[in-house]
Image (cartoon, rainbow, N blue to C red):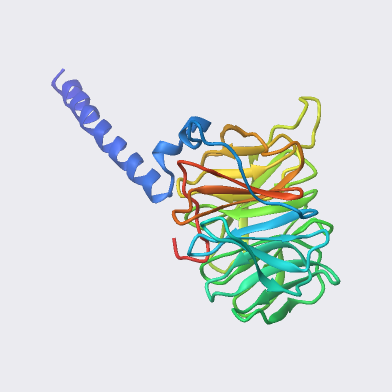
Length: 312
C-alpha cells in the first residue's frame, strides 16, 4: 500500500512537469497558442472593409512590401513597370521599363527579385537604381519568396517544380510533383516553406534544411473549392502574418489557416473578379493588400505581416 501511494505521488508531480515541457516545446516550434483555431473575427476589424487604392490596370499581381510599409505590384498582362503605393495611399511608378512580372519580393541586400513573363521567362533582380540583372536565364517562374539568408525559392508551374537559387548563385530543383505549384510563402520563423497547388486543393509544406534542401513534404492545408464535388480550388498567391497564419488566394476568396493548417475562414474577394496575390503592408504591416484583376485594394486588420528579408 505504501508503494502504491508513492507511485501516485510521483505521477501527480509529473503531470505539471509534462505540461511545462509541452508548453516549452510549442513555443520553441514557433507556434502561437493564440492563433489556434483562429476565426476571422480575430483578424478582421468590425466596420473595416476593402478600400480601393489603385485602378486602371489589366491584371495586377506580384504583391510585396518594403521595410517602410510601402506596397509594390506589377501589371503582368500589359504593364512594363513596378508600381509603388506609399503607406498614405499615393500611387507611383517605382521602376519603369521592366518586363512583365508575376512575382516580386525584396531581398536582404535591398534588391527587388522578380519572376518575369515577357519578353523572356527569367528570374531577375533590380538594384536601388532600377538596373536589372538576370539570375536565371531559362525558367518557367510563377512566384517567388526570398529568405533572410538570401536563398530564393520559386515555383515553376509548367515544370511542376519548386526551384532554389542558393546563396552562391547555383540553381537546383528542390521538389517535383505538385500538379501546378503557384503561390509560395514561408512560416513566420522561416523554417517552413509553403506552396499552393493551382490545379488541386492542397497547400503543401516543407521543412527547410540547413543546406537549403526541402524535406517532410506534406499536404498541410486543404483549400475549399467553389463546389464540394470539385477537386480544384485555384490556390494562388499567399502571405503570412506574425502569428503564423497563412492567407491563400483562391477561387472563393482569401482562405486563412492557422499555423497547424486548420482553416479559420475565407475573407471575401474585394470584387467579383479574380484575386491572385496578397501582402501585408502599411507602417505597421497591418493592412492586407490584394491584387484583384484590374485593381488594388486594401483593408486594415488586427494582424501584422512578416517581412522575410528580415531575420525572424
